Amino acid sequence: MSSRRMESGFWAGMITLVVSAALVSDIGLLGAQPAVAQIKSAADVKSLLSDVLPAGASEIVDAMKTAKVGETLTLRGHIALAKDAISKDTATFTLVDEAARGGVAPASERLPESETGVPSSARAVVQILDSEGQPLRAELAGKYGLKPGAEVFVTGKVLVADGAESLVLSALAMHIPRSPVPSGFFLASAPADARDVSEARKAGGMKVGDQVVLRGRVGGSKTPFVAGRAVFTLMGRGLKACNENPDDRCSQPWDYCCESRDDIMANSVTVQAVDAKGQVLRTDMKGRRGLRELSEVVVVGKIASTDGKGIVVNATGAHVVR
Image 1: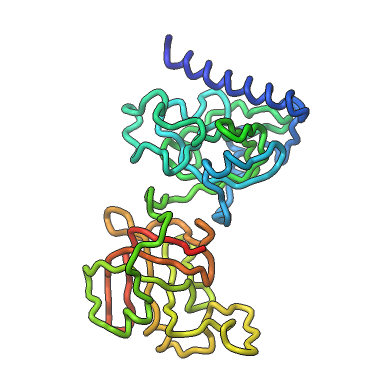
Image 2: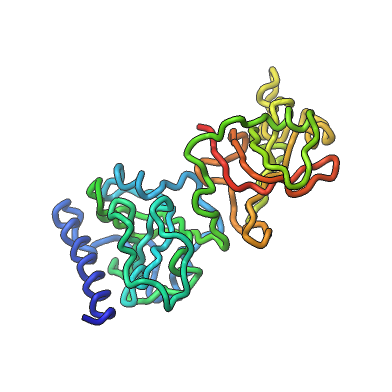
């Protein structure tokens, strides 16, 4: 059987699955789904794209267990590393959970037909519906950054959810980072022997190339995250955030406005995630794994620079303390 026929059969089966689930749960056929935007062609898909990374996105394996048909949720995943990950017939693609993905995307000609090593419980299918509520007849491969291995955040309405191995969304909005954060960057548990940023800075002795494990809170200015870049400022406990001072009613307590600039510098480090060439990743960090202002974070990395006042850490991992 040709790969074209195999792919057509796969997506035909998936559409049948969606329709069957819709009938069973009395939500109607796909043709009855409400159209949110006037999507008539692949060019119109641009209207669904957002420059803002959505906060609180769920990982696929977590969403699989709790998603309910008809609700709206936000997922994060990577397009599967396979030729059939993006349909050639409709605006449909498969996301896989980061923990289950197969690594770095190979050249397109060396992609397997299907990514067979990923269990169904770690997959989600995303569809873009046209103005009549039907799957859009368009191929999205190579458009808007959609390609095997790409990181994608999708906010959508749940069409199919069985709590175990089937999850299908109709996309309402998408965010596609220009640079994905490396797999495994966010750590499930906090590394041992972390030093508070203030303690480490006060002790001194940190030099370029040193491996460090530091603990602190995101803050130090009104905008401790750099927009569009994987960079943020981590503050130590040597200084109090504004909301820890009695009677302080600061609307942005993470800016430490009660402290001098010199003291903030002496109790902070700049954290950045970089690629293999040492270039800062072109993606937002705010919103990932609940990361926000005043989040407590444990960072693992290497000292990239120090000028006596400021220290920059190239992070290889981070744990957001809940």
